Image (cartoon, rainbow, N blue to C red; front, side, top):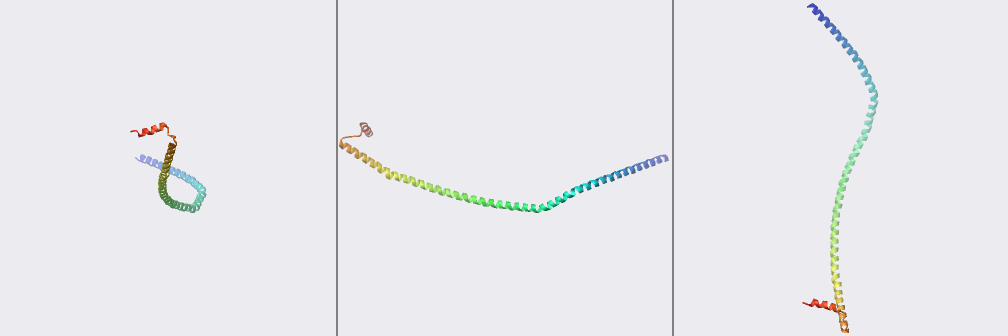
Length: 168
């Protein structure tokens, strides 16, 4: 059994030595990888530091301008809202005034048309009727004069038409 123990001890020693060698190899690789990563990080830091510095300055410089732009935009929006409300009131007032003017013009035109109609009727009554009467009187006088002179201008046909109107 001692041989078995010796074999196991030898195998265990070999395994421990192999593990130690593997760990040393891993350590060496990690150290090399760490050196490469440090070089990459330093290179990246060297390249990004100026960019980050410029970006930081740009943000600081534009902060005041951005704040001013936001304030100006807010002021513009307030003015637009105020002017929009004022324009709405003015437009509404103009529409109301226009509506009143249209009603007033309608009343005026209606009154004028009624006056014109009344004047036309009165003119017709005062001019046309007397002219008809005067025309009839002149025709009657002319007919009377012609009758006394012995000349009758009324043609026979016309007298027959007048007589037919009297026929019942």
